[in-house]
Length: 153
Image (cartoon, rainbow, N blue to C red; front, side, top):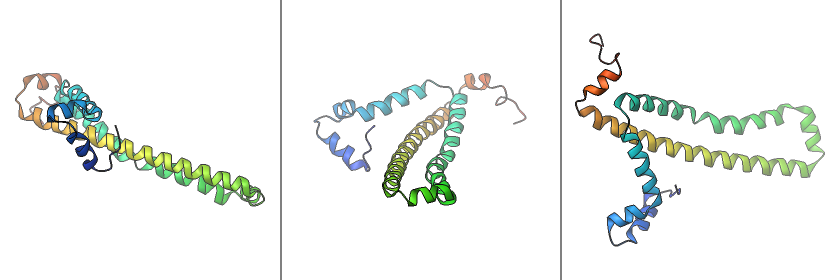
């Protein structure tokens, strides 16, 4: 999926086609979203609820990854006197470490926000399908999860 940054770029790419239906069918990004949507439509309400909980769990964990990768090397550099002494005597090594560290941070931040956007997409699809499927009366879901069918709940 291309990182558009804003919906305007996607809108402009869709306007190139004469028909709206052809435009949506020719967009690889929208086809990918449609495939994800159709996959989740085949799942039961119970399975969708479990997926929703798992997605929200990963959503809460996403912020720690860039934080850990960006602060741990700095802590080692600051508090390691041997390493600091060695780097102070070697400017090219320091330059190489800084370039490598900045590159690592940029890659990790890009990956973090890409994962965050996919997480938001999957969460939206699962929550939308949960809302639609919970409005439909279904006895199948109550039988698949005996706890939900319990009169005590």
